[in-house]
Image (cartoon, rainbow, N blue to C red; front, side):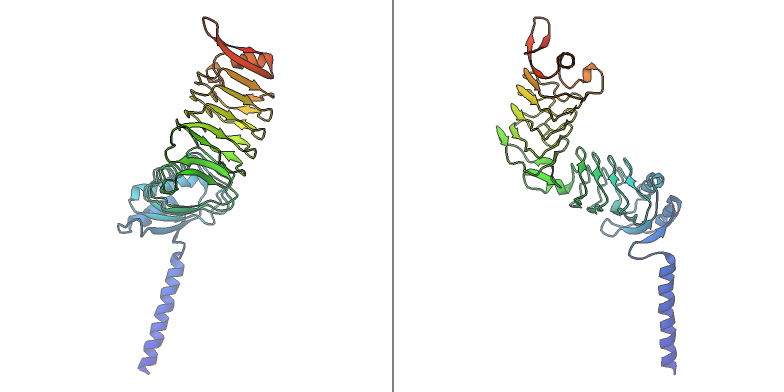
Length: 340
């Protein structure tokens, strides 16, 4: 009889324990909390921990709450894995978790469509991240400086990646030398280029060359861009050693600073497909003496004359003369462009 009573009491204890866990809101997703104040109170009660044993917390938040939550995690000095599943978020805002060095993990809800500028920049304890299928854009510097980030899952839904989005991550640094692609976007060239490098093996299905992919690659002298590419990102070839470039008819936009500082570039043809050229795209190219416009540029540098896409008076000469080839020469006082 006593054994039966012991068994019954033991069973009741187990049931009560399970009920307590359920009521506490803890589980696989972590302790369920509703505000930054609750998060602070909870973390203050937790013992010191390590990145490999983070405190798991689940929260349903909106964009307005994220900065406060990130600040609490940073100031608590405890390593946290944050589950945002079920949140009404449509974006991870710019700089949302920037410099949150004790954020050891995060689950992004499937409602999110964009990850903002520097959203996780310098989150040095993040080791892996899965980006949901709902995300279509990752803005510049989003994971820049995440030195422990070795694993990134990027869905095919992502069609836009900003400048230096993954720079400084262990993931990018672990890639072999050569071209690094993310969903048909040429993201970066890893490694040191040998002298007089010619890049002619860009994948034929590449849809975009993202910002800064070849910036300051002084040994890059020539590149073949396939006909599938529709955009050349900001600063793509900034400061590179290009002597020539063939821009295919598939390209519709050339980003700001795209070819800035290419001191060996002598000529360029802008195909009729290009309707947008960003600020300073071809400035600082002292050897550039011939430019051919095959079509009409609808959007050209949105700033003042010091931000025009080409040096000297080519901007004004093109507006006055339209489609054609322009050459640059010295008239004894200044460099001028003349339509041929």
